[in-house]
Image 1 (spheres, rainbow, N blue to C red):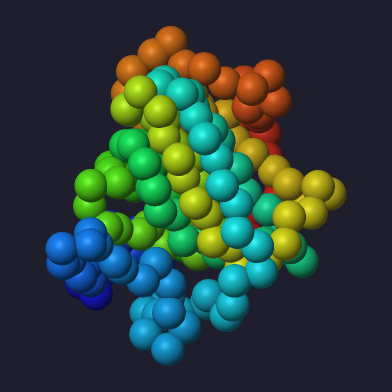
Image 2: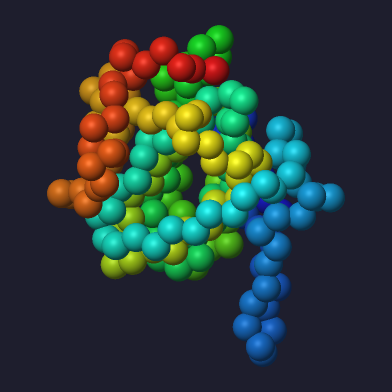
Amino acid sequence: MKIKKLSINGLILAELDKFEDARGSFFEIFNSAKAPFPDFEEIKQINYSYSIKNALRGLHYQIEPHSQSKLIHVVEGKIFDVAVDIRLKSPTFKNWTSAVLDSSNPEIFYIPKGFAHGFCVLSETAKVVYCVSGNYNVSCERGISFDDPELGIPWPNGPHVMSEKDRTLPLLSNIIDFF
């Protein structure tokens, strides 16, 4: 596994070891004995999403006591994936970074607790698996507006296909539930 630490402390893009032969290919998405992810204790839930081109999901997070670290892997397609630092005491609070995840490259994007997460689909469709360290809890669910001018994320494509809930998420300046 090749590890690439990103510009914000805690975020990791990992290129997985891929094994190929006449049958096809194989790689481990997660192995607890080899995991270089500091606060990813165990997988508590595995989520799957299927999305169409220009679908935009996010920016989502959960507060304590049900916060989640995430391992994001694209099974099919290509996405523009974003993590926003919402840790109040972090020197990179309000900063974000992105990665283009493509199913043709065996990569995972590690996003620890304290980050909001979202993505936009670049291919005709995308199938994404999220391994998370905590169970979903509706009372701890939060989000930030994808087009918050304070963040200035240059989302590709458009117009975006979004849920009504994601279209009405608050601006960062109106949020009180940070880490």
